[in-house]
Image 1 (tube, rainbow, N blue to C red):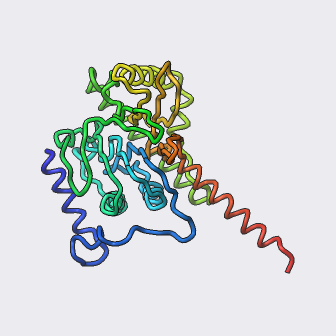
Image 2 (cartoon, rainbow, N blue to C red; image 1 turned 90 degrees about the vertical axis):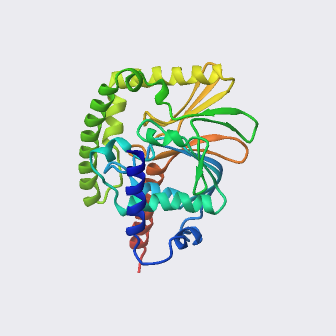
Image 3 (cartoon, rainbow, N blue to C red; image 1 turned 60 degrees about the vertical axis):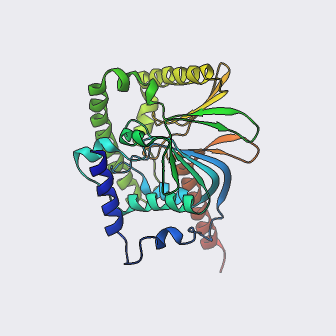
Length: 302
């Protein structure tokens, strides 16, 4: 299954180019630069839960983010490719291909890229300790911040009781979540027609559901405890699609969010400070600022 899936992705990547050219040219090209927006420089960027291969992936916002940042190290913290959905039917639009290319370009141009597979891309866990196209694969990693703190980096599904002990329930939940994301896309299609920026209905509903809040708290505590047991002072994970920075006992818990609902990343600056970068909110702010600028121009007297 793994070999066939990777072969299909590779085949699609080769046939979806807009113009015929040698296979390596697109990697060798300089990285994209948008003169309207200087690139943001970080020491480390942590991103996860793209779910490439599903309609729910916010590939446009993700690609905009990847083209807008530069970093020394990029951690891909699991569920990058959604193998669960690809088994049901192959869905891989050109935009998803562009995301893969953007990451490979970052690796080609000096960024260290570390891929830690999650439960949806668990078919890649067999490649731990290997590297392909400049991308290193690992089950988990220890990241040392610029100020010397040790952070355990893992996807987090290892601490999800539903995934571990009731796999059938996890798949059932995945079906329900897929339906919710379809509704989310319809809502945002309507917002786009009205000229409104992206807003996540699914993320909003999750925050309102009491059981979901309890689940998130339990998950955070379990992951933080695992980090403490391994001698780390912090832990970085994904999996639950809920970006957060919390102090839990002696451990700082970091969740980098996702690119299906919140569209967020965890970033480290060159002093070792970590923060959540909400890319969807940033884009909404840019749209609002552009509208105000346009309105101010129109209001100026002739």
